[in-house]
Length: 389
Image (cartoon, rainbow, N blue to C red):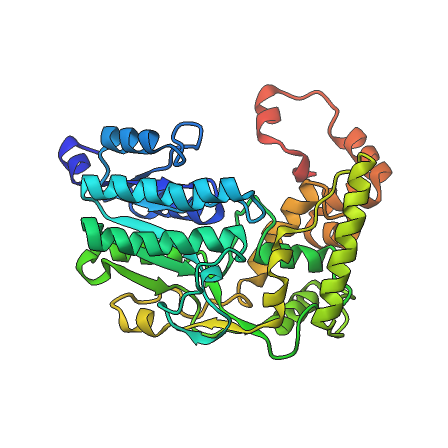
């Protein structure tokens, strides 16, 4: 690439580039816009958004033309970490972006919204002490961004995500926790009610939206958008759909009442504390802080998104159409990590050698001894693989 073309490229910074959302954005800009947009994703060791000086000096040195914040503290983080990463980190980035007069793209969450149907972008929860750390810190961040827009002219856009699904996530959380629970047969019954529906966000579509709003700042500046699939999904139907696709026995179509589920969670919590005293450390999934939402409908309005100039690049994709890809990616990954132990996945998804390794290692051993241990030339060795047998 010549110097003139290089100068025409936009340079952006993506904070949180190692996560599902940040990683998806980095991959998009690297593969889809290499000639027009370059995205840098500094690690938290290099740049800590918890330090105002770190952020400002880094952005001043790099001199980007936009910044995207996809960083979040883990769902079960302490109040201090949630405060420093989700709220003060957002504030630090926004203040630096305002000082440098560059667009700031902020990823936020439906956890800041009440339950209900067709929730609009401005229908926030109240900021109260009884909110969990995650929701409280993200809600405060949203309100502060609007305050900075009004007081110092911050050019920002907030993108609100619902339940995110996609591949290449290294953590088991959110939708992937649900998928894992079904695949691991750890969900005997349905912990929800009939006709409870939620909105879902396809991570593959998000980079196209971020790219579009960067190219159309006048339209999108100062706005918040619910970025979710047009049609909400019934939770029970999704769980049973995963079960059917994977050809599993559980969960049974028996709905556990909310009171019973909450009581069971309390009992389990007491047991885990008891185990901890004996040196056996275990934790419940942090998603259980949202147990009540499993029993309540929350769907986000897409009216503002539909009325914008953005055109859905993958209009037919839904969480159901993505199940084959998600199953292929995650089951393989979880098998490799030895956290999914059911042999049916190994048989269903592995190749012939993998099947023999799992079910008939003696046969594989004999096959290797017969065909793969004879001397051969270096050229043959480089071109031949075990799978060729």
